[in-house]
Each structure stands twice: as C-alpha cells, then as structure tokens.
Picture 1 (cartoon, helix red, strand yellow):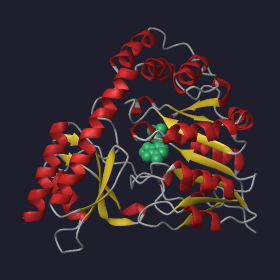
Picture 2 (spheres, helix red, strand yellow; picture 1 turned 30 degrees about the horizontal axis):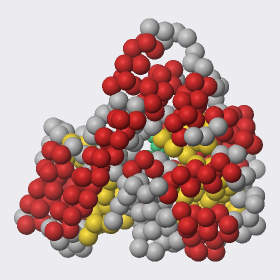
Picture 3 (cartoon, rainbow, N blue to C red; picture 1 turned 60 degrees about the horizontal axis):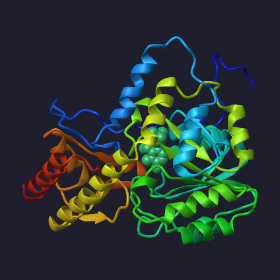
Length: 366
Ligand code: PMP
C-alpha cells in the first residue's frame, strides 16, 4: 500500500452528491419573485426584526451556548419540556447531528424515495448506508419502509409534509410506522412544514416524540417564521437523545441573533396565524388555477406545490423553468429528486402567484 500524496476524506465522502440550493436569481437578471426555496412571502415578524437591534449592540459577546431562553420560549408555545429540546443552525444541523450520533459504517438508515435530500447527505457523511423505500403516488409508504428494516437499520427519516412533493401521512400511519420499528431504531419526524398543516394531527406527532424512547421531531424557523437567513431549527424528543446531540454539537452552534429573533418570532402567534391564512387561500388557488390550465399538480399540505409538465418537446419542466426565469420568476427544478419533469413552486405573495399562473398559462399556449 502506498501513502497518498495528499489528505483523503473518509470512504464515502466523495460519493455524496453536493446539495444544490434553489437559484436566487432569474435568468433575465431582474428577479421579481424567488419561489425556489419554500421561503415565506411575508418576511419575519416585526418583533423578530426588532430583537436583532439589541443583539447588534454586543456582537463581541458569545451567545448562550445552551439557548436556554429560546428553548423555554419554544417549550411554552408548543407545550413541551425545554429539557427535551436542542437548537441548531437550521434543522439541517439537527438532522446531521442525529446521523453523526447514531450512525456509522455498516449501519443503514431508511428514507422515502422522494424524501428531502439532506437525509442522504447526512447518512453518507456519517459513513452509513442509505436505503431508499419506494413510494405510492409520491407519498411515503409505511409498508415499504417497514419492509426494508434489517438488523442493521438504525434510523428512519420521514418528512411530513414531505418536500418536494407536499404530500402528507396522517398520524395513524405515523403510529403504525412507529409500532413496526424495532426499539433500537430512531424515527426522525422532520416537521419543517408542520405549521402549514391544517389538521390537528400534529399534536399527536408531538405527543409521540414526547412520550417515546425512539422518536425525534425536527422543526425549523426557516419556513413559516421567515428566519431562514439566520439559520435556526430545533429538535425534540427523549432526554437521552437530546443529551447525545448536546455532546457532539458545536458549543455555540446557534448565534445570538438567531436566539433573540427566534424568541420574538415564536411568541408572535398572530403573525403565524396570518401566514397560515395566506397559505390557506393561495396554495389551493395556485393548485386549482394550474389544474385548469391542464397541468397535474400533486395535492399539497405545505407552502409549495409540485407541478408536473407534459412529456412533450418544448413543454417540459426545463422549458417552463427557462420561460418563467426569463420573466423574473424563479422556481425549482427537482430532477435531483428523481422528478425530471416537475417544477416546485413556493406559494408567494398574491402578485407572485398571479404572475406565475398567468405566465404558465402563456407558456402552455405558446
Ligand atoms: N426539512 C425539510 C423537509 C426541508 O424542506 C428543509 C428546507 N429545505 C429542511 C428540513 C431544512 O431547513 P432548515 O435547515 O432551514 O431548518
């Protein structure tokens, strides 16, 4: 064996397909509407923005590494024990920490066919093997997941609602999935879009994470709270899991800006209610209008819709994407999710939604 001439990453690292974020600029150089990353069109709560001013007076001080005040505020609003919460730089970080803490070479972790791509990255980065469970109608299939459990399985990732499909499993399915898992398999319920789900189902998911020894729920401030730029997310579950994550996370993984804004944002329930109401009006409107044009739109419960284009020269998703981008509207191609002829659109402002629908209609007629 020869010694390599330069440092070499651990096996598997170079097998990771780097995450490609949604584009932020339109092809015409004049971005009117960025609808590529499921960000909210309503911005952040004014209270969250005001909280940042106090932080700017003391940029030289380290933040509270335990984010105690933020965890207390979250705990109060969501009705959970703050000792069961850990905060991170986006829920992405929580997902990675879970993988690093519980997975290693030889272990398997399962996710659903069109599941969020960060699962694959986190699993591989930990040196473990991803196992993909096929879906039915772009929806996670509990039986297919359970059928892939082996004695090497250590974790199951499930986004509910899922990104990029917007599909949702009712709590009865989650309970069935959980009931079918061996006790040493950690179920990670990724609830990044939970606030948009207009069923009281989510209370049950929280209950499951609060009472089980092998369930963690991850949440984010990036979507409905409008704080994506600050990178803030959290996980909650059994104290023994939170303890493991606290041991491996960076000591100051969440900034003071994120903590301060997060506290203000989570307390501003009126702002969140307005954001949910906006989505309740516009997500169904966009879906229906696009269907009237003759396009297939997957029924969604999130703040985004997945639009399927005809497999016809000049009318494919890549063509639609180019057409919209040339008019200042940036959507998301999802070929890397195995959906080469679909476009994901975040629900935007009224003006954005109307413009995209009109432009898509024009595109289909052109
Ligand atoms: N989970 C899902 C399903 C997502 O769509 C996203 C954002 N794209 C995340 C997690 C991560 O969000 P963040 O790191 O900003 O909290």
